[in-house]
Image 1 (cartoon, rainbow, N blue to C red):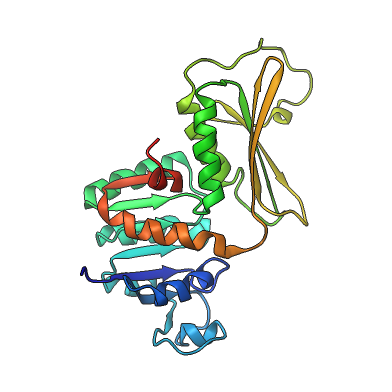
Image 2: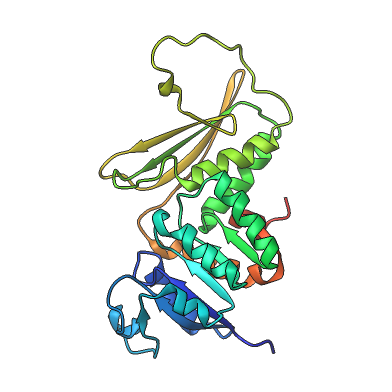
Length: 268
């Protein structure tokens, strides 16, 4: 039997990080080696989450945690710090699972190059099952219907626009198109921003409002018909656990970056 994978969990007290602690501890093939957070350093992570001691003290030192050479870093932190965390991990040849949003294509290109130079893998994306299914099914649709737009909703407090899920969806679908979008080009009257931001040639609309749960949808249009595929998150951060832990296990087997849980679940 293979040795369990040692996990460094960064953002361990965040909405998703806290949901990952118990499943990692319970898994036969995973070990929670370190839990990194900005607060409650020195306190047992189990107690900090309102449960029993599990023997892992919270650390606020990501470099020290990575110096222990974990088998994988799982990062659910903040767009302002995640890029630095990834660089620290790859410098130590530690594979990474990125659950944090807010990175762009240029970031992913750089991360891919760094990961390949280090000879390790990086998995990134929205790790919920329904988000993976949305992307997988939308890829199939984009091969047949060339005109589509992406709309995403998030709370007013979400800083990155569009969301990482919507951006990645637009980029993936633009590569699946085998013909140009249908419809005549028209000269717009009014602010062009009303048509959304162009991401890989796909209009993407980001709605930010109080009282809003995260959702992303892609709308396909053809003469006389329309198809909408939509995914809604309903406030339960545990939806990301299965996909994140799958990525932590699979990231050991490839080099470079893989974007999207659908890429790990489906062949194409």
